[in-house]
Image 1 (cartoon, rainbow, N blue to C red):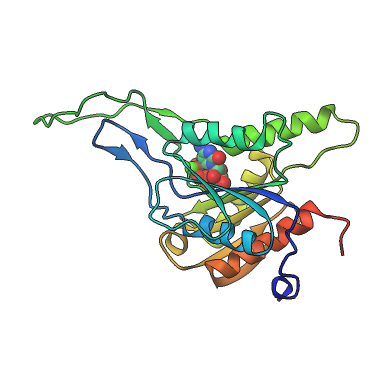
Image 2: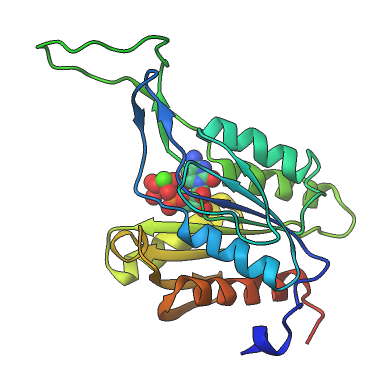
Amino acid sequence: ALARALPRDLAGLRLVITAGPTVEDLDPVRFLGNRSTGKMGFAIAERAAARGADVLLLAGPVALPTPLGVRREDVRSALAMRDALWEALGSDLSAADALIMSAAVADYRPAEERPSKMKRSRDAMTLDLVPNPDLLAEIGAARADRAAQAATPERRPVLIGFAVETDTDERVIAAARGKLDTKQVDMVVANHARDAFGRDDNRAFLVTRDAADALGVLPKPQLADRILDRVVSLCRPEAP
Ligand code: CTP
Ligand code: CA
């Protein structure tokens, strides 16, 4: 309702939004991926641009059109998304007012990417994987370092994470609280894998240090607006 009353309430805010999966190549033919389709991140980008924000969308491989008024950059792997993120935020994190990290970043990548196609054999096969960096936690840590050095604690950019789990509501919220602290972010949007992936709606919780707000089932554009309402109040705590 507020979004409709104040359609340009994000004017002047620079948002970086990540969306979709990252995919990790095994060879020129095959990859490791996940079920993210990018609908949530694209809905956030679409609503943010409609509300007047300057939006950069960093997208993994998805089959979605670029929302109106949104600048889009496509990436493939977690490491490529990491480079694009630091480029977009600036090494001192000054180039964005908020980061909304809705991408399903791969936790592992193959230890080696083979230059030519692996051939079939009758033997069992084991894949060697190595951990990817936690992109959001790196940015959270960098913001905390900067705040520790500054005379006035700097909360920019506002950092929003996601947490997707396969568990009870209570444990999903508890896991999101854990991610608030380990990643040093301002809010985590917690949801269930079964409610989230590939769907046009989602049942999510907005989890902060003091509260977990159950939003119920909402179409993704409406959930996007609720997330953006929080981004506005985190970016402009002095405003009414
Ligand atoms: N994330 C990230 N870099 C990674 C993995 C996740 O930046 N390598 C971000 C996601 O974009 C999301 C948040 O961290 O905003 C939480 O992702 P999630 O997969 O739920 O949590 P993980 O920390 O990866 O923990 P786990 O998968 O074990 O639950
Ligand atoms: Ca993960």
